[in-house]
Amino acid sequence: MSSSSSASETPRQEPGRTRPRPQPLPVNQVEHFYPGGERIAALRGQGAPGGPYRPEEWIGSMTTMTSQAERGLSRLADGVLLRDAIAADPEGWLGRDHTARFGASTELLVKLLDAGGRLPVHLHPDRAFSRRHLGLPHGKTEAWIVLEAAPGARVRLGFAEPVDLPRVRSLVDAKDSAAVLGLMRPLDVRPGDAVLVPAGVPHSIDAGLFVLELQEPTDLSILLEADTINADLHRDGHLGLGFDVALQALRLDPLSEDELGALVVPRPRLDASGVADLLPVAASPYFRAHRLRAAPTGPDIDPGFAVLLVVAGEGRLVPDTGEQVPLRRGDAVVVPHACGRWRLESGDAGAALDAFLCRPPEPVEG
Image: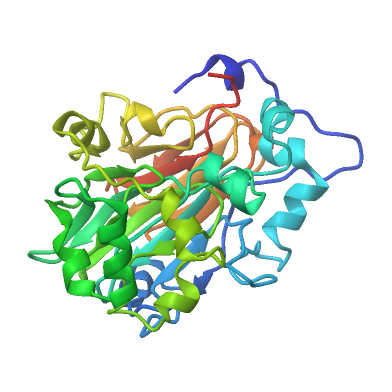
């Protein structure tokens, strides 16, 4: 898993500074306006509080929830905010090339999302909209990697037919959730599948889906209905911009078959080294995701900031520099650039170690 930018960059350490190290993250489960959370608790353990309204865990997060000072931010095991640790040593955590392009931002938010109820139909603004109307550099393109799916549970991605803005606005004003949901295109998904959700495309997730989500580092959502959640659509649904402005971010035409085919990736096979790329090429300006398997040894991973979620087995993370990190199912680990190249190894029992690797975009112009 080499790249010209990261492979050529050698981690450096300044005299007197403690090198950032890979380490498991404490559980960072947050309350939200929809139910869920029990499957997060079952995976993560470690005192994860479960539901009924803790349906998300924000992992390796430098992002706060809307209108919150610190809620959503991840802490390291010693209680220090990851945001503050990175600000104190951005090159150690992120690498010289990354910080030269992006500054002291991971450019990434990883979540566990356990939909105990249907998520409302909503959308996220793109970068151009965010810069113009919110003064922010990021929009919110996101991707889902399906961990579990209850029978019949689907995602909905885009409208099923062309819709004009007056029609959408009339349904929003009328709070007609059934009609809005009826406009959407449902898609069947299975565990291991991945779906890229471009900013602007309306979408929804059925109850019964448990996903690992990668996204741009914002908490920006525009609601088209709110029948299943504890929120006031007309007060909370438009980012404080009013729907006249907010709905300018909405893609009204349906995704073509070719577009849809390029956004949905059925569960890919692992290659001989034990790695599978999970997301389509269109995700690369925003984030990267891979499945890793160590049986007994996994592929070598180049230096760079990463979030690792272990979903099966036990073993260890073996960095080029520093101590090994014991791993077991449910661990979420933040990996700094400073640890150099690293790999996974399975435990002595012989069972494979399976994990998802989430990374920022490559720090190269493209």
